[in-house]
Amino acid sequence: VQLQASGGGLVQAGDSLSLSCTASGRTISSYVMGWFRQTPGKEREFVAAVSWSGGSPTYADSVKGRFTISRDNAKNTVNLQMNSLKSADTAVYYCARRNTIFGSYSVNPNDYASWGQGTQVTVSS
Image (cartoon, rainbow, N blue to C red; front, side):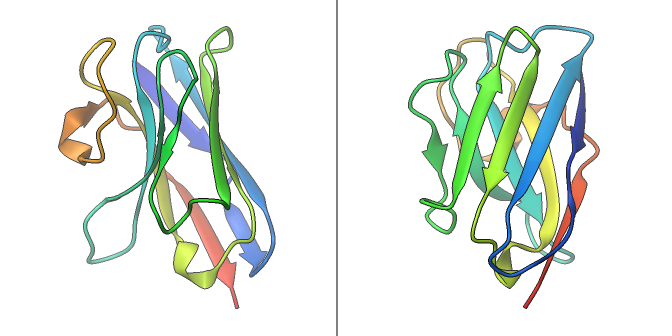
């Protein structure tokens, strides 16, 4: 499966952005999908994940209450709505597919495969 992330950009603190991840080649409907982010010199950080059914998403504490992950299995897409953005949210954002069909949530990037190319989000303070 190929994943294409889009929607990043330059915004001011307090603004909102909506990221989208479109999958092609194979369906992602049976997999947990996650969003991660990374800044230069740091490890890839878990942001959010959504189950294959779309229910009970999980979030990193740093984004809880501000970000919302959702998916549309009919369109083979996963979205990340980001509100009340902070400068600390500046990073390259990646979507990824869990490497186990019908697998459980994981915050470990090693448990995900088929990474997209990433989209840059820059939040100015």
